[in-house]
Image (tube, rainbow, N blue to C red):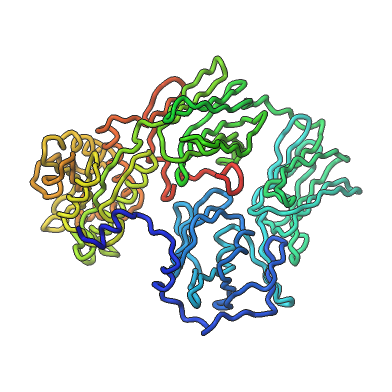
Amino acid sequence: WAAGCIAIILVCISTDSNSAISAITSQTTPSKEAKDASFHLYLFGEDRGVPAHVKADNDWFITYGKWLECFPIEMERASARGLVFERSDGLRVRWRVGTLEAVVGSKRIKLPRTLRVFNDRLHIPLKVLCKLTNTRFIYDAGQNAGYVCAMLTEVQLMPATNGWQLNLRLTAPVTYRIDRLSNPDRIYIDLHDAVINYPPGVLLERHGSIASVRIGQFSTVPATARVVLDMDEPLNYEDRTEFDDNKRATRISLFIEDAKAPQPPIKPSINNIELQVSDRDTVTGIIRVERAYDYTAFTLIEPFRVVLDFRNADFVNPVGVQQIPKNPLVREIRTGMPDIDSERVARVVFELHRPAAFRIIEKRDEGLIIVRIGKGGWYGLVIVIDPGHGGRDPGARSPVGMFKERLIEKDLTLDIALRLNRMLMYAGAKPMLTRTTDCYVSLQDRVAFANAVNARAFVSIHLNAWPKPGGNWGTEVYYYTPQSRPLAEAVHKYLIMLLQRKDNGIRRRRFYVVRRTSIPSVLVEACYINHPEDGRLLQDDEFREKIAKAIFLGLHDYFGVPWNLQLQGEEIVEDVAQHVASDAPTQMQPEGEAPNQQ
């Protein structure tokens, strides 16, 4: 085996290491860390004093430390290579040292500045961090002070029983004050250390006895955002906000009593959630629901979760976060009320210790939803994914000038392989890649690896080329051993169905990787890299996602393992790939049921 690349094969994700610091070339910076003794930092109203920092490029590069705990993020990984964290809206952010972009969810965001290493210490540009966390930085030059504030991102007025429900959402927890004024009658909410994310003025017009809802920036330093309800007459109100331990909240809920408010329809209610352990490998969740309900079910990864969203429903007794000690499958159960596509949903989350299959059984007559979680489906299935070529072997290339940027097979096959890897992990399988970076792996080492890891299938991903550019196009799948023919047929079927390219058939050839592996093995030539139309499609992220999805569905058919999702009494195979984001439910990252909990 090629020692350098096999290390990458066996350890797909680099671990954090202090020693990695020395491997990163520091930016050109002041010779030592410059600490301006007069600069003061306030984070969401908390005085953080004078942080260790470097002032450069019109920003404050602050040394990584405990001050980050003030931000509305859940830090997953911090190393000399960069940061990975989850925002309060559930989106995962990957931010690498030295690159002027970050990946937020599935999108790449251009940045004016990035993480740097000064004197072997990771420094974070404060203004850029605020941009990535949906917070706002305000600099007071007169006081030489920086203020990081939450943003008011949502103002919603909804009918409630005998009145209205005012919901405010912010990007970080804040303290606030509610009071009333007369002549004319109005209620106001002052949000401390917050800025508005809307133009000031009237935001919502007539709702019963509420003439309007206005917002404005009451003050800038310190920042106070104000929400005002103008009323025809004095109305009683009740603060229904759930605080954290510091009397702060990201969601502020105010009930306003109003006889003129329309009465909302009776909602379904989730009365109880129970967990039963059948055996070491099976756990059953029982959800009791009153009245007709509508829901969706899906899974999330990192960590693996089974999620049920009940539309337009409420909890009678929300469990919040309930730890499940000594359970072999379920770590905890959570409930929450996120807004998904501008619709309030009641969310139930089963967070698992490891990927698992699940089945949902409905008993609507009894008001029961039964969630059975356990082994089965894809669980534990080892599948080797082989991105063709790599390192000094570029594979096929598009002709110079055919496209704005020349297409190189080794780069595209790795991209497709990583997408397939994500889908298989999401479904609960155990995919293993012959390479995860641009390195050279010999054909012999690829085969030896596949034969050594007790895999159930081997898929080698390639892109074809014709001697005369543009002379051929379309899709073909290769195999050699008879045991591999059914796998080739299954993968080929979905490639043709999803890619809609010319069908060049299933072919038996003596390619080394399909001939010498001892397991069912196929080599996919998805399309031609030097054909104008095929090449144009290969530049599209969505098309490469389709290639990965087609291989995934072919493997699904070959192994005959349904994803075990049953809705409304009719068993279906859920299209897993449509839920998968570059990290995790794509959206799949729906918004979290509570800050830093999703």
